[in-house]
Length: 118
Length: 280
Image 1: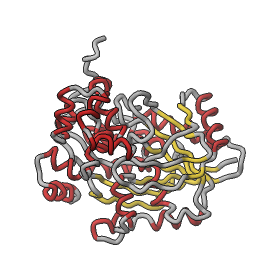
Image 2: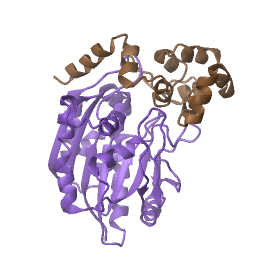
Image 3: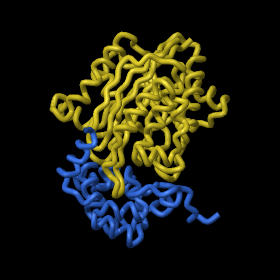
Image 4: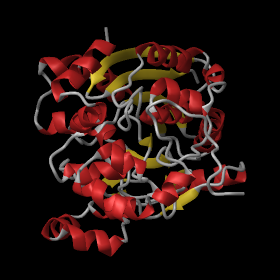
């Protein structure tokens, strides 16, 4: 069976993190997993490009990280739980990255969530 | 023999841990959410469980994609929390009950649930936030804890039916433990939320309310919800509802709903807090 076989129906605006994505994003997610330690975060900040190389990121993955572009990081196989450790280094919380991914201001994104409760 | 006194549900998002660390419990944004907890603490104070089974999902502190167990059970004397990378304060270790863990593992594998046993497992916010909410003082009453982690990181995740069946097997394992102790089951996570993609911020009040009703009265009906339907309705991380199913399976077929609180939103999430008392 091809590794590209799609087991999952599409859900709009949603990338299901399955075996295909887990293979595609392995290096990127492994790098992000390393950011659980302060030492790794310091090493990254000192030389991001060397740190990308250490984990074998491809060019698309490197560029998505340079841009801190969450949708691009997901497209190249990033899983949000690991990516949160990357974005956390730049002080971005879940509402910040929610706003970034939906093209809204953080205030508008929060307002949208509050309205969902009405 | 061990007795299951009931089950508790709670959200476990890091924003709650941050709100506690910053002492924001009485701020207008957080007040409704935190008001859901004193009745739970009162109930716990009345019943004083000896052991808490804490069903949660690891979010990339302990498990990575190299090895991803569908169901993992802690079998350690104590459980350590650690730096998750984005600034939540690290908690002191939690006392385990390794002998009881191994009993559960033996019984459940005998019952054909093939468990990953963990003598070392770092517990993340999915475990620590509920412990902080239910036992904020960490006093003498705080039960020994047994963590159970389900995979919600990488698809395929287990089905709703498998999770309810897991709970049933877990319940039988607990009730066959020879010590006369009281056990409470924590089903953590959820309710609807989605952190990733163009649909980030998806939240579904109607679906959450349906889940909170059916988890009490008709959990078997919830097993008809497919995994893609669950994600379509509840969002990517709304899949955490499977841990509520695992909790529910361990309880008696009929339960008394003693308390519930639903807050929408906290951060990006619909939050459901419940006490389901076992009818023994």
